[in-house]
Length: 140
Image (tube, rainbow, N blue to C red; front, side, top):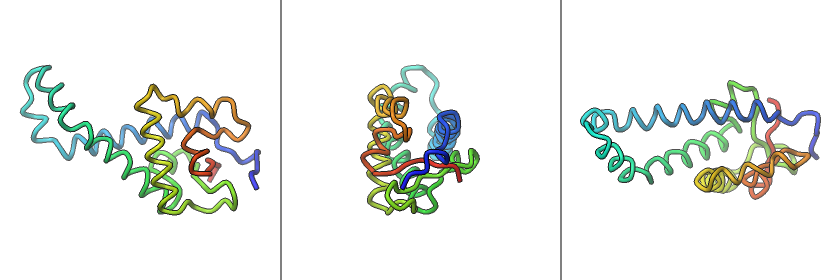
């Protein structure tokens, strides 16, 4: 079961989150580089973000799903030397559980990061998306 001594710290998880958001931002900018270069007003930027909001959400879900499913690590988790594993047998999550974890994670972000709050009150430091996907984040 869960080895409480091997759980990733909140600090490492936070840095991983920041790194992953930076990676996703760079990917988003790379995808829309030409269109972003044509924006000249604040109103234009706001309209662009509104028009492409679902693309950003999709990019986040795909990024987290694929990397969590492939090796249990996003780039941020790799750099912080942590990984996501199943709580039961501590193996890498299946594709469906990786997708569920990623989708719930993004939903939690959309609603004032409320999905991250349970991690501060749980002995296993599980967020809402960890609980739903039956996963934990451990040191790699």
